[in-house]
Structures are given as structure tokens and as C-alpha cells.
Image (cartoon, rainbow, N blue to C red):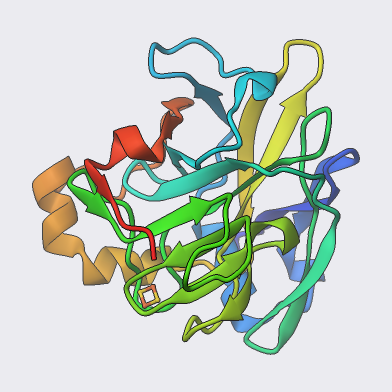
Length: 238
Ligand code: FES
């Protein structure tokens, strides 16, 4: 008997998510792979392990947390203005990005793995970052810029590609904000997933860092979100 597979569909941040039977949906090829990506609820904490307060986030740089795998970094960003829901396209297929969360709808999250050739923040350095000010490459404030080959993404519009060779938007991490305690929980991934390719490309490097048994492990139920300038010893801006 065929195993029924479910995907978290989130219409808007306020409406939350619902489990939908995949067999009832006509999905593009890449979206059909999403159920194979873990979608665990993961509470975001500060570096000391205390639940992160959305209102405490700085808008001066991105934070890095692990999602949906322990080895796949994601950016948590507080924008300067509310981010509205946006319709996006990847591989010729459209999907809905639900917009920012938090009291002022300014908090967003995306994979920090570039959609072009999968550059990502490492402990010693990062060539991909969010810059609230305009840079030489972006020419516009509030962009995610990958200096490897100068791809620019707009995090206020679902990380759609503004310029450069990236073939599609960064996959978005779905966030849930709890107004009762101002906490943030990552609850899923939407958009074009790059993780399988990432594991193949960086297999040896990830095994050295996380171990052969754990380099593809799902993120634990709590992960710390730390400023990129603390996560990576050197951050390139271009
Ligand atoms: S790897 Fe990011 S632009 Fe090429």
C-alpha cells in the first residue's frame, strides 16, 4: 500500500499551517521532494538557550540558526519594514510566500545556502550575508548578497532573485510567532529545497564537522540563533 505523505501548507502567517495529503495535490517535481525534507517544529533560542524574543532581534544583521537539518544554516532577519505575502516562481512553478511574522511582520527566515553554487556561512568565513545598507553589488538596502558570484536576493519579497546567477529564490523557512511569549518557532520549508544537493556537494566537509552518522540529522527541537558576525569569524560584504 502506498504510504500517504503530508506537507505543511501555510496560507498566511496569521492563519497558520495545515497538514495536506500530498496525493490530493498536483505538485511540481521539486515541491514533491519537500515531504522528504524534515519539517520539525524547532524553537529558536539565544546563545544561552533561553527562548529568543522576537522583539529583541536587531535589524543590523542576520542571525544564523540550523534548520531543517542540524547542518543546514538558515538566516533569521528582522527587516526595517513589514514584509507582505508574495507570489514567487521557481522552476516555472508558482508558490506563495506568507510574509513576515512578529508584532510588526518584519521577521523572516530563509536558508543561508545560496541557490547558485550553494555557498553558505561556515565557522571561519561567510561570503553570503544580509546587509541593511546598500552595498556596491546590491545597490539597494536590505538585501541578501552572495559575494561568491554576486547573487542578490530581496528578503522582503520571499528572497526573490534581484540580480546575479542564482536560478531561483532562497527556500523560505516558515516561522510561527507566539504573541503570548514573543517566541519564534520554525515549522517548515517552502520553495525550492537545495539540501540534497548540499549534502552531496559538501559531504566530506560535513562529515568532518558533524560526523558520518549525524551530518544529515534533523535539527533538534531547540536551536540557537546567533548573529552572523559571531557565527562566522569573517563575513564578506561586497
Ligand atoms: S554561490 Fe552564491 S552567487 Fe554563486
